[in-house]
Image (cartoon, rainbow, N blue to C red):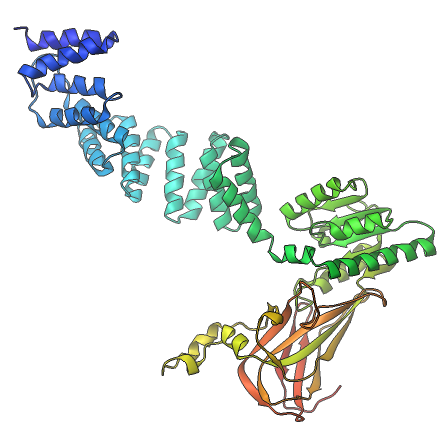
Length: 528
């Protein structure tokens, strides 16, 4: 009988020469007579690790359990531990068992850097994220620019919501490896969490440049877009009545300017959105239209839409706030006509007054036409238990408990609701409460008005809306009784509803600042 060490050596020679059938037969011949011969178990497991991974794992476990055999290659305990861990890793089985094997190997051979990385990977897969971070950092002390280790640390910090720590690591990953797609995706996620949405968009785009079909990057980018581009853009763009009103007023303003001045006007649009109003102005005969849009992806898409419609030489879209525009740089001169649609349901919430004030002072000719030119706000008190309960907790529904203190979190000021979607009753006819002339500055103001209820009921909310007067000829109303419009109404809830009776006047205090309108009961004298 051949000495086992000679059989193992012969089989190993065949193994390294690529004669795997001969090697397997040789190792098995040794094990037939010496079933716990560690060297043979280890080498046969290594040979079968690719073609028969399950069998290789069983052999590795046998080698670890067996007493160390004599002679042959003299495989070390560290090699057995590393190989057993590799078999588990290959089969994606029991990461905790892999951690245990690698930990034992590290205790015997602490200088091995690769094993530190593998141990970190196994800890990560076993759900021990904190331990994995520690292990990867130990590895990075030895190899500080290893991108894979940095990427793992960044991803684990991301999972642990340690956003600022993750940011530092992931920015380093993409600096070292600009083509590291998952680094860009994870970095984009961090930027998004930190509300750095322009940077999140850029990072997702970098990932998609590397892998255009990557679904995580596509979904992440779409999530950014839905945060920076509210869904009301779509219903507004599809509001034909609104669009036709703007088109009529823009065409009339440009025609009148040409008739009066003998030249086409320079038009400025504040809040370009899709570029629709700018394109209307260009088509109506403007010399040029300069538009500004503060939301970068919207400005970029608007530029593309303008080009798609053959107007790239007539319309320029700047990704800027209007207050950042400079005559002589962004506009060739002061504009002759200003077009804007920067109104929320409460008219002032998008800071239209501040934007127009700045434009009149810095961007427009003194006699510039402003479209729309004026607006009137109308208010109507309503009864609506449905709407009130949407914004206030009522003890009537509390099963005998008192949770009135929860109304600390009730909204102060108005919200935007499409009243047509809710059950409500008008307690009085709509009344005009404030007029706005956009060609001049509008100061903060307060006034008292008298509203006469036409029916008995509980006043749950004040609802208000506005009518745009574009030029004295074209008007557009955003009220709840206007058909086929995208507009919602502003609704300000009264936390403590008040009973009103028909014919008994209610004194109402109307307060207006540059950015908000509010209503409140007032028991003092009234004036109109």
